[in-house]
Length: 94
Image (tube, rainbow, N blue to C red; front, side, top):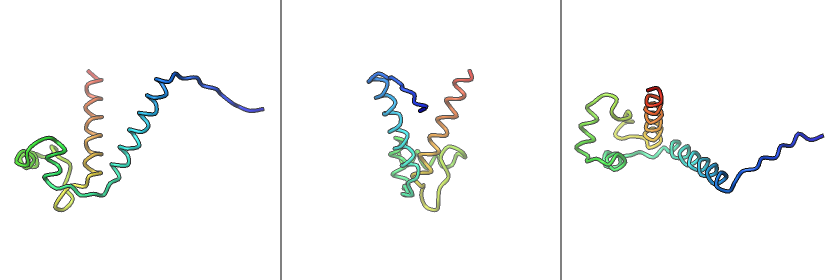
């Protein structure tokens, strides 16, 4: 005897599930990147000037930690995701 379960989902539900899975896979792949970002790359990522980025760098906790002369792309994306999740938890607790 087989333990088979059949699940029915709509096309829209399936598309939403697949979109979420693909987004998660892309994010995880990007987070594993060892590519190094310069100050210019970081400024573009955050949509600010390099001058603003350096001002932020003087404020502890405002940016992810540097790795030598730059930032590791995977670490930056992971740091962003963790901060976004922490912010969402604070909003949900209110």
